[in-house]
Image (cartoon, rainbow, N blue to C red; front, side):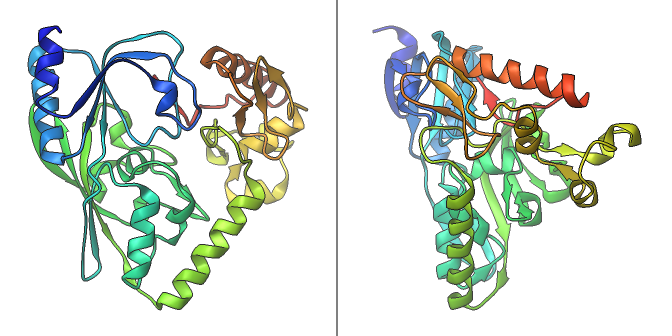
Length: 312
Protein backbone atom coordinates (compact mmCIF):
# COMPACT_ATOMS: atom_id res chain seq x y z
CA UNK A 1 0.00 0.00 0.00
CA UNK A 2 1.12 3.57 -0.60
CA UNK A 3 2.40 5.97 2.05
CA UNK A 4 -0.77 8.10 2.22
CA UNK A 5 -2.93 5.03 2.88
CA UNK A 6 -0.59 4.01 5.70
CA UNK A 7 -0.76 7.49 7.26
CA UNK A 8 -4.54 7.71 6.97
CA UNK A 9 -4.91 4.50 8.99
CA UNK A 10 -3.57 6.42 12.01
CA UNK A 11 -6.78 8.46 12.09
CA UNK A 12 -9.59 6.05 11.25
CA UNK A 13 -10.86 3.26 9.03
CA UNK A 14 -9.67 3.62 5.44
CA UNK A 15 -11.13 2.19 2.25
CA UNK A 16 -9.68 2.56 -1.24
CA UNK A 17 -11.95 3.29 -4.21
CA UNK A 18 -15.01 3.10 -1.97
CA UNK A 19 -18.27 3.83 -3.90
CA UNK A 20 -19.89 6.94 -2.43
CA UNK A 21 -23.26 5.50 -3.45
CA UNK A 22 -22.96 3.41 -0.26
CA UNK A 23 -22.72 6.52 1.90
CA UNK A 24 -25.28 8.98 0.50
CA UNK A 25 -29.05 9.12 0.89
CA UNK A 26 -29.27 9.38 -2.91
CA UNK A 27 -27.49 6.02 -3.33
CA UNK A 28 -25.51 7.75 -6.07
CA UNK A 29 -21.82 8.56 -6.39
CA UNK A 30 -18.60 7.30 -7.89
CA UNK A 31 -15.63 5.99 -5.90
CA UNK A 32 -13.34 8.04 -3.69
CA UNK A 33 -9.64 7.29 -4.02
CA UNK A 34 -9.54 7.20 -0.21
CA UNK A 35 -12.53 7.15 2.13
CA UNK A 36 -11.73 7.67 5.82
CA UNK A 37 -14.23 7.21 8.65
CA UNK A 38 -13.11 8.95 11.85
CA UNK A 39 -14.93 8.20 15.10
CA UNK A 40 -13.18 10.66 17.41
CA UNK A 41 -13.43 14.42 17.02
CA UNK A 42 -9.83 15.02 18.13
CA UNK A 43 -8.54 12.50 15.58
CA UNK A 44 -10.68 14.33 13.02
CA UNK A 45 -8.85 17.59 13.77
CA UNK A 46 -5.47 15.84 13.63
CA UNK A 47 -6.36 14.32 10.25
CA UNK A 48 -7.37 17.69 8.79
CA UNK A 49 -4.08 19.20 9.98
CA UNK A 50 -2.17 16.34 8.38
CA UNK A 51 -4.01 16.62 5.05
CA UNK A 52 -3.52 20.39 4.92
CA UNK A 53 0.14 20.03 5.84
CA UNK A 54 0.69 17.54 3.03
CA UNK A 55 -1.34 19.56 0.53
CA UNK A 56 -3.71 16.66 -0.06
CA UNK A 57 -7.07 17.22 -1.73
CA UNK A 58 -9.99 16.35 0.56
CA UNK A 59 -13.70 16.82 1.17
CA UNK A 60 -15.87 16.36 4.26
CA UNK A 61 -18.94 14.13 4.03
CA UNK A 62 -21.49 14.48 6.82
CA UNK A 63 -24.43 12.11 6.94
CA UNK A 64 -24.60 11.90 3.16
CA UNK A 65 -27.91 13.76 2.86
CA UNK A 66 -28.38 17.02 0.96
CA UNK A 67 -25.40 16.08 -1.20
CA UNK A 68 -24.90 14.75 -4.72
CA UNK A 69 -21.61 12.99 -5.44
CA UNK A 70 -20.71 12.91 -9.12
CA UNK A 71 -20.22 9.66 -11.02
CA UNK A 72 -16.51 10.18 -11.67
CA UNK A 73 -13.82 8.98 -9.26
CA UNK A 74 -12.92 11.58 -6.63
CA UNK A 75 -9.13 11.81 -6.82
CA UNK A 76 -8.51 12.65 -3.19
CA UNK A 77 -9.64 11.89 0.35
CA UNK A 78 -13.27 11.97 1.48
CA UNK A 79 -13.54 12.15 5.26
CA UNK A 80 -16.59 11.23 7.29
CA UNK A 81 -16.77 12.10 11.00
CA UNK A 82 -18.92 9.73 13.07
CA UNK A 83 -18.19 10.97 16.59
CA UNK A 84 -21.68 11.06 18.14
CA UNK A 85 -20.85 12.56 21.51
CA UNK A 86 -23.58 14.69 23.11
CA UNK A 87 -23.38 16.57 26.41
CA UNK A 88 -26.49 18.27 27.83
CA UNK A 89 -25.99 20.64 30.74
CA UNK A 90 -28.82 22.88 31.87
CA UNK A 91 -30.13 24.40 28.62
CA UNK A 92 -26.95 23.91 26.57
CA UNK A 93 -26.49 20.99 24.18
CA UNK A 94 -22.92 20.30 23.05
CA UNK A 95 -22.49 17.88 20.15
CA UNK A 96 -19.71 16.69 17.87
CA UNK A 97 -20.17 17.62 14.21
CA UNK A 98 -20.78 13.99 13.23
CA UNK A 99 -23.74 13.53 15.57
CA UNK A 100 -27.03 12.85 13.73
CA UNK A 101 -29.42 15.79 13.85
CA UNK A 102 -32.28 13.41 14.68
CA UNK A 103 -30.45 12.06 17.74
CA UNK A 104 -29.78 15.55 19.08
CA UNK A 105 -33.47 16.41 18.70
CA UNK A 106 -34.48 13.21 20.49
CA UNK A 107 -32.02 13.69 23.37
CA UNK A 108 -33.01 17.33 23.86
CA UNK A 109 -36.69 16.32 24.04
CA UNK A 110 -35.84 13.64 26.64
CA UNK A 111 -34.06 16.34 28.65
CA UNK A 112 -37.19 18.51 28.55
CA UNK A 113 -35.71 21.13 26.25
CA UNK A 114 -37.65 22.91 23.52
CA UNK A 115 -36.55 24.74 20.39
CA UNK A 116 -35.20 21.85 18.35
CA UNK A 117 -38.19 19.53 18.00
CA UNK A 118 -38.21 20.19 14.26
CA UNK A 119 -34.89 18.35 14.02
CA UNK A 120 -36.56 14.94 14.53
CA UNK A 121 -37.26 14.70 10.81
CA UNK A 122 -34.05 16.24 9.47
CA UNK A 123 -31.53 13.71 8.09
CA UNK A 124 -27.77 14.14 8.22
CA UNK A 125 -25.42 15.42 10.89
CA UNK A 126 -25.49 18.52 13.06
CA UNK A 127 -22.32 19.78 11.38
CA UNK A 128 -24.01 19.66 7.99
CA UNK A 129 -27.18 21.19 9.42
CA UNK A 130 -25.26 24.19 10.78
CA UNK A 131 -23.24 24.56 7.57
CA UNK A 132 -26.40 24.81 5.47
CA UNK A 133 -28.48 26.54 8.17
CA UNK A 134 -30.96 23.69 7.81
CA UNK A 135 -34.50 24.28 8.91
CA UNK A 136 -38.06 23.04 8.98
CA UNK A 137 -41.46 24.06 10.29
CA UNK A 138 -40.59 27.75 10.36
CA UNK A 139 -37.33 27.43 12.29
CA UNK A 140 -33.66 26.91 11.45
CA UNK A 141 -30.23 26.41 13.03
CA UNK A 142 -29.56 30.14 13.38
CA UNK A 143 -32.22 30.31 16.11
CA UNK A 144 -30.51 27.80 18.40
CA UNK A 145 -26.75 27.85 17.68
CA UNK A 146 -24.83 29.71 20.38
CA UNK A 147 -21.29 28.89 19.22
CA UNK A 148 -19.35 26.60 16.87
CA UNK A 149 -15.86 25.13 17.13
CA UNK A 150 -14.16 25.38 13.75
CA UNK A 151 -11.01 24.09 12.06
CA UNK A 152 -9.36 26.20 9.37
CA UNK A 153 -5.81 26.35 8.00
CA UNK A 154 -4.29 24.35 10.84
CA UNK A 155 -6.04 26.30 13.61
CA UNK A 156 -9.01 25.49 15.84
CA UNK A 157 -11.14 28.38 17.10
CA UNK A 158 -14.68 29.29 18.13
CA UNK A 159 -17.27 31.38 16.34
CA UNK A 160 -20.34 32.76 18.07
CA UNK A 161 -23.74 32.91 16.41
CA UNK A 162 -23.27 36.41 15.01
CA UNK A 163 -19.93 35.37 13.45
CA UNK A 164 -21.53 32.52 11.48
CA UNK A 165 -23.25 34.92 9.04
CA UNK A 166 -26.38 32.79 8.90
CA UNK A 167 -28.74 33.41 5.99
CA UNK A 168 -31.46 31.42 4.29
CA UNK A 169 -29.88 27.94 3.90
CA UNK A 170 -26.51 29.64 4.12
CA UNK A 171 -23.66 30.38 6.51
CA UNK A 172 -20.03 31.46 6.52
CA UNK A 173 -19.08 27.76 6.42
CA UNK A 174 -20.33 27.50 2.83
CA UNK A 175 -17.85 30.20 1.84
CA UNK A 176 -14.47 28.92 3.06
CA UNK A 177 -15.40 29.58 6.67
CA UNK A 178 -13.73 26.41 7.86
CA UNK A 179 -14.79 22.90 8.91
CA UNK A 180 -17.27 22.55 11.76
CA UNK A 181 -15.93 20.39 14.59
CA UNK A 182 -18.37 20.90 17.49
CA UNK A 183 -21.65 22.73 17.95
CA UNK A 184 -23.35 24.27 20.99
CA UNK A 185 -27.10 24.86 20.98
CA UNK A 186 -29.02 26.92 23.52
CA UNK A 187 -32.55 25.67 24.07
CA UNK A 188 -35.41 26.51 26.45
CA UNK A 189 -37.11 24.43 29.13
CA UNK A 190 -40.38 22.79 28.15
CA UNK A 191 -42.80 20.04 29.14
CA UNK A 192 -41.65 16.64 27.88
CA UNK A 193 -45.20 15.53 27.02
CA UNK A 194 -45.80 18.64 24.90
CA UNK A 195 -42.41 18.27 23.21
CA UNK A 196 -43.11 14.67 22.22
CA UNK A 197 -46.49 15.68 20.81
CA UNK A 198 -44.93 18.51 18.79
CA UNK A 199 -42.19 16.24 17.44
CA UNK A 200 -44.75 13.65 16.31
CA UNK A 201 -46.76 16.40 14.61
CA UNK A 202 -43.65 17.56 12.74
CA UNK A 203 -42.87 13.99 11.63
CA UNK A 204 -46.45 13.44 10.48
CA UNK A 205 -46.39 16.67 8.47
CA UNK A 206 -43.08 15.69 6.89
CA UNK A 207 -44.32 12.22 5.95
CA UNK A 208 -47.45 13.65 4.33
CA UNK A 209 -45.61 16.20 2.18
CA UNK A 210 -42.29 14.59 1.28
CA UNK A 211 -41.69 11.52 -0.90
CA UNK A 212 -40.20 8.32 0.41
CA UNK A 213 -37.40 6.64 -1.47
CA UNK A 214 -33.85 7.66 -2.29
CA UNK A 215 -33.47 11.42 -2.55
CA UNK A 216 -31.35 14.22 -1.18
CA UNK A 217 -34.14 16.36 0.21
CA UNK A 218 -34.99 19.66 -1.44
CA UNK A 219 -32.90 20.27 -4.54
CA UNK A 220 -33.38 24.04 -4.74
CA UNK A 221 -33.65 26.86 -2.25
CA UNK A 222 -36.99 28.61 -2.03
CA UNK A 223 -36.86 32.06 -3.61
CA UNK A 224 -36.62 35.10 -1.35
CA UNK A 225 -39.12 37.74 -2.49
CA UNK A 226 -36.89 40.61 -1.41
CA UNK A 227 -34.46 39.53 -4.12
CA UNK A 228 -37.06 40.14 -6.85
CA UNK A 229 -38.47 43.28 -8.42
CA UNK A 230 -42.16 44.20 -8.18
CA UNK A 231 -42.85 43.39 -11.82
CA UNK A 232 -41.80 39.76 -11.43
CA UNK A 233 -43.86 39.37 -8.26
CA UNK A 234 -47.09 40.15 -10.16
CA UNK A 235 -47.22 36.52 -11.33
CA UNK A 236 -46.74 35.12 -7.83
CA UNK A 237 -49.62 34.30 -5.42
CA UNK A 238 -50.08 36.93 -2.70
CA UNK A 239 -49.74 34.34 0.08
CA UNK A 240 -46.15 33.62 -0.97
CA UNK A 241 -45.28 37.31 -1.30
CA UNK A 242 -46.67 37.97 2.19
CA UNK A 243 -44.66 35.08 3.58
CA UNK A 244 -41.53 36.40 1.87
CA UNK A 245 -40.64 33.16 0.08
CA UNK A 246 -41.76 31.49 -3.12
CA UNK A 247 -41.60 27.69 -2.78
CA UNK A 248 -39.32 26.22 -5.42
CA UNK A 249 -41.64 23.21 -5.54
CA UNK A 250 -44.53 25.46 -6.59
CA UNK A 251 -42.48 27.03 -9.40
CA UNK A 252 -41.49 23.57 -10.64
CA UNK A 253 -45.10 22.38 -10.48
CA UNK A 254 -46.25 25.41 -12.49
CA UNK A 255 -43.82 24.37 -15.21
CA UNK A 256 -45.49 20.96 -15.42
CA UNK A 257 -42.34 19.10 -14.46
CA UNK A 258 -43.67 16.70 -11.83
CA UNK A 259 -43.01 13.22 -13.15
CA UNK A 260 -40.35 14.46 -15.58
CA UNK A 261 -37.78 11.69 -15.92
CA UNK A 262 -34.23 11.23 -17.16
CA UNK A 263 -32.83 7.71 -16.95
CA UNK A 264 -33.83 6.37 -13.55
CA UNK A 265 -34.25 9.78 -11.90
CA UNK A 266 -37.60 11.52 -11.66
CA UNK A 267 -39.12 14.74 -10.33
CA UNK A 268 -41.37 13.55 -7.51
CA UNK A 269 -45.11 13.56 -8.17
CA UNK A 270 -45.63 14.37 -4.48
CA UNK A 271 -43.24 17.34 -4.18
CA UNK A 272 -41.72 19.13 -7.16
CA UNK A 273 -38.56 20.13 -5.29
CA UNK A 274 -37.51 16.50 -4.84
CA UNK A 275 -35.73 14.47 -7.51
CA UNK A 276 -35.96 10.78 -6.66
CA UNK A 277 -33.58 7.96 -7.58
CA UNK A 278 -35.93 5.22 -8.78
CA UNK A 279 -33.07 2.73 -8.72
CA UNK A 280 -29.80 2.86 -10.61
CA UNK A 281 -29.92 6.57 -11.40
CA UNK A 282 -26.64 8.40 -12.01
CA UNK A 283 -25.50 11.83 -10.91
CA UNK A 284 -25.63 12.79 -14.58
CA UNK A 285 -29.35 11.90 -14.64
CA UNK A 286 -29.98 14.15 -11.64
CA UNK A 287 -27.95 17.03 -13.06
CA UNK A 288 -29.77 16.79 -16.39
CA UNK A 289 -33.08 17.23 -14.57
CA UNK A 290 -31.64 20.09 -12.50
CA UNK A 291 -30.62 21.89 -15.70
CA UNK A 292 -34.05 21.35 -17.27
CA UNK A 293 -35.83 22.68 -14.18
CA UNK A 294 -33.66 25.79 -14.01
CA UNK A 295 -34.19 26.46 -17.70
CA UNK A 296 -37.98 26.05 -17.57
CA UNK A 297 -38.43 28.10 -14.39
CA UNK A 298 -36.36 30.92 -15.82
CA UNK A 299 -38.27 30.85 -19.10
CA UNK A 300 -41.65 31.02 -17.34
CA UNK A 301 -40.87 33.27 -14.35
CA UNK A 302 -37.49 34.95 -15.07
CA UNK A 303 -36.28 33.43 -11.80
CA UNK A 304 -32.88 31.79 -11.40
CA UNK A 305 -33.24 28.87 -9.01
CA UNK A 306 -30.25 28.19 -6.74
CA UNK A 307 -29.29 24.67 -5.70
CA UNK A 308 -29.64 23.77 -2.03
CA UNK A 309 -27.82 20.47 -2.42
CA UNK A 310 -24.02 20.33 -2.21
CA UNK A 311 -22.40 18.82 -5.31
CA UNK A 312 -19.07 16.98 -4.95
